[in-house]
Image 1 (cartoon, rainbow, N blue to C red):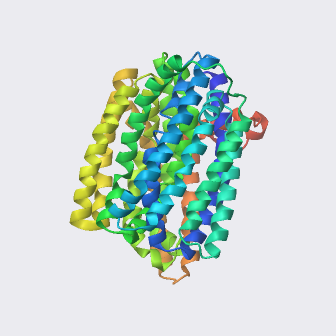
Image 2: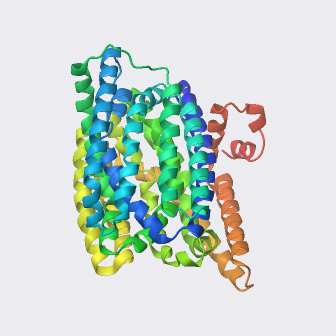
Image 3: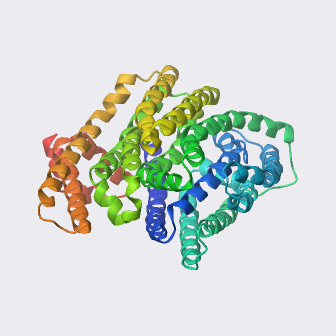
Length: 501
């Protein structure tokens, strides 16, 4: 990767990372408070409604945003045409969802879902307004602006949801929080973008972008089914209470990987498009970004597994004990799920959206069948086993497709992650040993959790400093790219690493 591209990428991730981190701290705090006010059934109802809204929402922009980011040359008329198409589609989707809401509520045997889905569907209209502005902000790598809007939306959503929950609005506190967040995001992105709609409209040229976007949309739809079939099936077969338990486990288990990964993917998408004909440099970037992701997500996920009992008890309380089994399984699955979205972005960025669509279609069918069988045979535990066993096997096919296109070696990809995984496992073993020792002192659960977290952080830090010189070198380079002077880094632990190398 050239120094200019690397620096711009790192700065973009820095802006998004700071905004995302601050927003997620607030969001997590809000979620933990709401979990003690609302019931698992409330979260189960919201999960069902969001599965429906999320699925229909994929048709809202029909991949227009991704197509705008990917295409090198754009005309004003075709972009205006895309905006017009997005508005028309959003209105049709809104009306369709209203018409289907009663049938969905009947299927899940819960009449409250009809009103919830009808209200949440207004998000389609808001989303259409921000589709093109968001695409241009991403295309120009203006991630500082995106991060600011996302942070503001999270803050306002959390405030609204907490106030309404305290006023005993139940699940509606989650619904109205979501709507308010959409309003803030759509208005903010529109005004921050330099693009404005004009009367020059070329629907024919816009259709070409839409057609390309449809391939991306279809792959995303299959991917959504692939990753959300479990919730839809659990809601139907096991009921809203167990779905609420599972959804909470999924939210917590994917929190570190989901947020950090989405941050990197947002930056990687336009970067991969720029490098789509330079496979050697593209492969280098993919490996570095993958390893960088793993350095954050792997120790976090393994740490969450070894501290899971204390973590669930302190964060959620005893009423959420059933979260433990699916939480551990999903954290284990997260070791792969946290890094493989970059592979999907490679297929999109290199113009192979059809191949990604075929892959995700296959995955969605396999996961639908697997989750249905798992839930029927062994409830939540059966679904958890499906994720741990089937998901890793499916991702091998994705990696194989990428390697065939870019010339990357599968062995090089896996070898790239081995040092990170070893460090995270070593950290986990040390934390388990310390946990067993401290259990005999009958310490309060919160104090025990704090000791485990501190031990994990210290262990992983020492592993990086003394046993993984490559990681420390990359951290140093990242800090330089962020603008920290070399004089400030000419000290321990970086100075120690330079002398040792």
